[in-house]
Length: 458
Image (tube, rainbow, N blue to C red; front, side, top):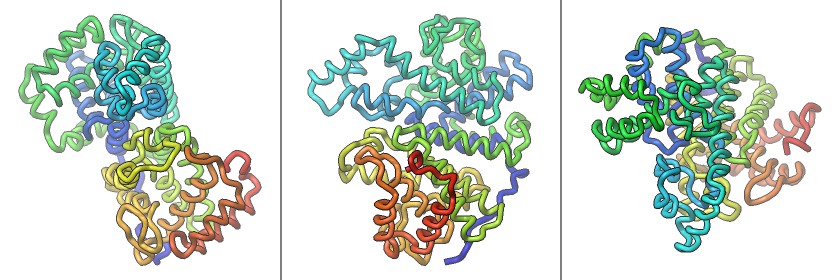
């Protein structure tokens, strides 16, 4: 085992905000159940519409980030969807583009494993308070997206553009029922852009244009529909939309390169914002990423890591579970044991984390550590089944921190374990799953840190 094998300090000045956010937007696609690249395609569509409308350079920059980050709050209502409809939140979001208008969709997708009578009962309960339930779901999503955008350093205009994504031109949207010019222009463009992408994927150019025409004056601002129609006349526009490296072309464009300079502070804001998105996915993961990052930092200090290495490992820990955004809450929040197919799906989340993080070239070493947080010394972990010879100290630290928090926090299948019981379980895992030296350092670090209150973190 090499002390810091794989660690490469990130040259923050070489990164672009657009590059990092564009890559991480693929995690938002996972949460919404959309095909990879949805947010980036929406950004391409929306900025073309913005240019047609004559937006200024500063407005185009804000619009660009509104579009890429439009789904920042999407993970926050996943657990509630599962609770209300007794169904998979990801499939529900995919199929439910017109949920408020499609009773047949609701009957098919609510409690899919139940009898027809049970499905009707779930739908009837929803319809009895349609406005209240819809308002709750959208309000949670919109407020979360707004707040995370501000925490990441974006302007109020960008945050408001994300918050108003689900408002409709005729006032029939959510959560405020805002209408016409009271809705942020960025929101109006973002809504039509995501609909164009979804319908283009399923019904082609003609289907997408027909859909926005049908909803002009209802969901969509007629002037934005007109601009979209004008942009859509060009065959080159649709060809570019399906280009395999569209996202890279966007990042390399003048708009993608003209964003704020990347600094350590901004990178920390971005990483911290996505940690909030990850932890909002399930009530049982609230604060998980932040706590794992804290434990990793305590361990890195104990092993003598320098400041740069500690910061690198902290960022890795904050993003290690980003792949969980692609796992349904019916699995993540299940109170009983998982079936073999469900467990197989859970075991995919480190791979998904690796796929997302690897999209930023400078994040590749972080991706290589994040993918290993469920590996074991005896080679019986997942997803690759690698053993002690291939597990670096960074990987071992992240694994111990993750296991410690999993044991010392609430889970759907059990309550918080006392600290002594948590340690007893980890001691039994030493040598087979966990590195005993790392576990010993964790115990010492926690015992010596009076700021840790395990009435709260346990």
